[in-house]
Image (cartoon, rainbow over all chains, first blue to last red; front, side, top):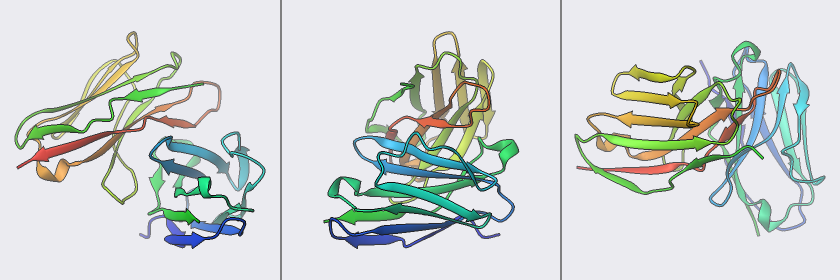
Length: 114
Length: 113
């Protein structure tokens, strides 16, 4: 079975540009999590969805960040406008609602904002 | 602010030795604890979970939990070079319906052949 799929794997952009990260969860999973990982702050939860509904977005750093999950097989994380401090690895993870503690991570998107 | 603390390392052990990784957490109400392994440039993968005080063994890995001391540890017996990675401790936040995990920053383990 395919795991969590993320695209792009690498993104280099200039400050002020819009960045869109994409995630396809494991088929049948109904919880989806977006994380950000940096050396300074480690792995931080940004937002998570249950059955396509955002449950907690308190980790989203500011209004420049937004996330959507229009259907069970697709989610996006958008940064507009991007800033150099947004440079990080962004992971998407999915799980079953009834066992959300067992999260399967995608390969991540390495974002560099110049 | 819920916190999970780990020694960043690096922790170096010779091949065949026991590696001991430690983690403390601030959320006294937490009931679920996890260890993830992350190879350089890769994504985290779950290797152990523990919910009750005491030890839980899975192959060469043993997780230990002491809720009174708010302390979790991971022992790796007969360490192999392939165990070289960063190990992340994760704690499920307490609170009704909360499935959020708070991660430590990880301990980098290096197993020397």
